[in-house]
Amino acid sequence: MAAPQKILYVIGTMDTKGQEVDFVVGILSCSEALGKKGIEVRALDVSTSVPNALVQESLASLDRSVAIERTSKSLIEFLKRELEQGVLAGAIGLGGSGGTALIAPAFRAMPIGVPKLIVSTVAAGNIAPYVGCSDLVMFPSIVDVSGLNAVSTRILTNAANAIVGMVCGGAPNHPSKPALGMTMFGVTTPCVTAVREELEKRGYDCLVFHATGVGGQAMEGLIEGGFLEGVLDLTTTEVADEVVGGVFPAGAKRFDVLSQTSIPCVLSVGAMDMVNFGAIETVPEEFRSRKLHIHNSNVTLMRTSADENRRCADWVADKLTRAIGPVRILLPTQGVSALDAPGKPFYDPQANAVLFDRLEHRLNGLANIRIERVSAHINDPVFIERVLVAFDEIRHEA
View 1 (spheres, rainbow, N blue to C red):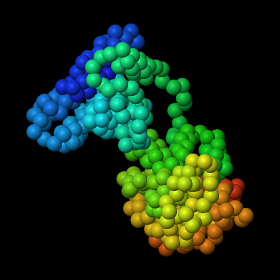
View 2: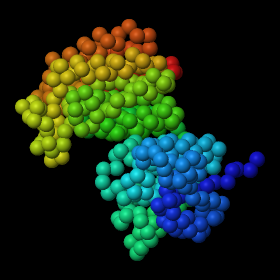
View 3: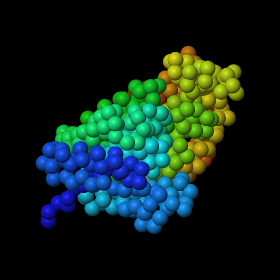
View 4: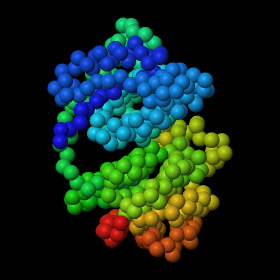
């Protein structure tokens, strides 16, 4: 059976961006690289003022935000079907703020590795709401996406050439291995690095995510996509930011994936002794009298209190009680980060004890969860070895 015709979509609101979409289609249609691979270039209209290819009825009578949301959902479903049928080669979108808000959710829903790019007027600002945890490329339009001129044609041509490179570039020469997700922060690097190096020797492909809010969410996105076969979530500091109000929050859905899949998980409380803020002058007034540590000119850390640790433990426990797969929780009783050790600024065994006690109180007795205190610092060889043993114990239980 012949492989399906691959299609590279150029997506935009043709009622307002038709000229620009047609220009990009023209550039791509002349691409020798796409031609050699037999990839068709096709425009996809997502207009909201007139019926479009995805929503046949007129949306003009609706509030613009409602029309955008409805069309965006239709686009998500359309691209999902194209992907499932093996048709989708990639997609490039063009938009202002409204068009970007319409297209970006559909692109975020596409799996990591599928080429996706948006030429956008908002790409020079805060793009986190548009990109999320995806590998979506935001390409600044410089001028508004409104007509063709000396600047816009150069930008659109560059963007078109970029998507061609993504679509036609060779696949990475990386051996296929079972993949594991791991979370790390600077203050847990010795532990995670040692665990990673040992697991790589055993034939695993270890994907390390920086625990900055987006990192944990990106890892769980790969779990949902079926990319990972195990998780070593050793640095859960994002929970402290979520609970207390730091700049690297876990997000409301953190750990929810464990209630949807039986993936084996070794979890610890790495760096849960700290909440992250920006430069010292950005620390909220209510925390100015707390124990603060200037990590660098842009990052200020605050030691979590006993009460905050109790709240963090409850937040984690509320999530993990719904986990369906095997979970091992390891508690390093001699310190949870490089700053939490004798002589270091965040050393506070009493605050840690509240965290440990509360987790045990909430989670002991659950059939699929085992919680264990390890008499070691999180970066000590003893703890590292216990992590490896725990993973060996549960990797066949899922």
